[in-house]
Image (cartoon, rainbow, N blue to C red; front, top):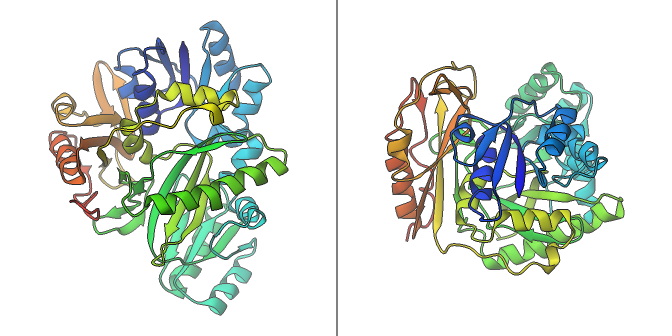
Length: 420
């Protein structure tokens, strides 16, 4: 079978890489793809925008493609699934109505309240003065969020009232017309990516993402500087409660709203000191870079699971199979990220790095037979090991061999784990 992956990041490279491991997948197309998908055997990039729904539909028909897998949140929020489904094309990814769970923080919070899932208390504001008044009333630490899509950078954890009110000004000045002010929760964050067919839900192994740009989890929020899987703090007992108290109630509530949610239900959780999982946010797609740490450990063929979701047969699938190992993904970023940075630098050492680890391309492009940097997060280097110590060692042995101008990566990804 042939599959089309929509998107151009590290997540999409990981999806294409995983899909091509199956003997039943003959070819993967990526649109628009990146330097990694351009050079991967069995994969072909197409010069189509993720918003070119008509072009994507025509490509599917012309190439006899069996399944479209949508990576990023933007085309999902714009209704790519609705458009393709109207033409009887199988799509893994929720409809525009389902994607509201990520594209509107307010809608998602109302859904959580209706589903009675544990989550932080929040209020929505369309007026900056009212938001600031509320912040002065409740105090800090507190969390300020853009209501709409913000490429992973619309969340500010404010430790002081001054920082929180500045965040309000910043988000409104950036053009967001609605913000959430949310209770600050203490604990450790965990990402649970669950597959859903509209009725049944299957969680993948839990991962942890390092959002802050600086070591020791300091500095600005980014799209993610690294990830580990499986997250030790998300014990079997906690995961059982995540499934029964969070994922299943949310799917049932979506059903009540008439939403047939087929895709990834990504729960961003805080595991409190008391061991309770509370929802920070939901996303409507695979996480990035969590996917680059989760998929290398999955043994069940990915296309079987994604097809089962589109055919509403996920509940009939056998238990997922996993490698009894650990994965650590370290992101190599452009100097200056998440603020301004330069593009177009040649990258060397990828082949050497691949002797130690898996290298997933994110912000890269193939030009004149040379891989160049083309984004803030350039590569995700994933080490696999029998424990976290060996996975960390593999990841850093790999990334240390990669060179490009102003390369930057955190040296402490995975170091908080129990490295027994």
